[in-house]
Length: 428
Length: 96
Image (cartoon, rainbow over all chains, first blue to last red; front, side, top):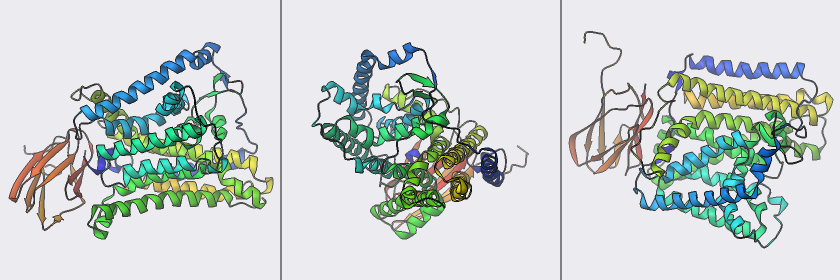
């Protein structure tokens, strides 16, 4: 199986219940109206990461934090990892193998869905953390260099999307195994070097999980108790460290590039430029990097584009607004990959269980109009939430006289993202 | 069978592989669910045709003119037809 393992071309523009241009224009207006309404009617900040959620009964926290639960989960994680490792070698060595599905569907998309529902689950599901736990938590005890921030995670995420979207054969078992071995080696070495802090800042999947978990209604209060609360209060609790804008730009840029690279125009362009597989990989790599850089540059510039702040504050602004990209990223991930998660996910689980012929329920694909509507819904809802989160943050960090004008650039950038996103999803 | 149908009841794609060049590439077509799709291939090399649909199909292309492969797609969506060794996408079919 070659390039289009994760092609997800269901629910194209022809499936929308309304003409595609209406959806596009409607979405841009929805966003503009949201901005107009919040700009006029919403004059004081309402969201606060420090506001406690409504606590769940004490036994929930006790059960989740119980050492027995943690040890059981760690053991289950290691068993599952071992099982996947074995089944990829004893299973069929072609497109019937379970590994690509585990890697691209269960890990990449399933992790986001779980994190949105439950919180940063990779902390308990990470095989490296489990190994670390079973080895008695030993490490060299060095401190993780603060300046590195989330940069290693951004690089890891880029390596993942590179394999998926730019490498010569994304479905190749050998390529995926190599990728996973390098990931495991780097993460184990990092955990040995500076303990769990490496996992928290440099493991791409853990950082992705933490990012996605910020839109979850479930969170922990400052006393550690598990609580349920407004996700808008949860969003600003995203830790701002060096590289956080890069992490989000890689995630957003890669989803856009995923749609873009599947268009006949881009494929024709690549074929015209080069005949060799390596040449095509080079062109796609450049395209992927360009998409991530454009997202990063536009967001960075828009966040800084305000009056009345000094140079130091201006430098901090992109990081302070970074959390407003999270709902946008999550919206796109679901718009792009929901069918894959639901349908390929079933297939992958059956393959893991050694039942490759079990019947998959194509619930979403069989209802293209529902699917297309869901896609527009995810994208638009993600952007509206992004605009609201950015506005609330602007009220907090921008000087009073510049609160409105200081947000205009961000608003334009977000309308641009919506337009481009919907265009790529449906029109491209 | 007298109804005037909006599109022909089957889709036919003529594919030529000659001297490492494929025609067509990146063609865009439409088809219906369970509608027969026929690939007529003339080739001077052996290769594999992969149809990324549900269910998936794979055909061995031999050397010679007038090789015919037929398949149907059961689940709506976008289906890529690729030449495996040449790494070329022949067509993308929107199945509705």
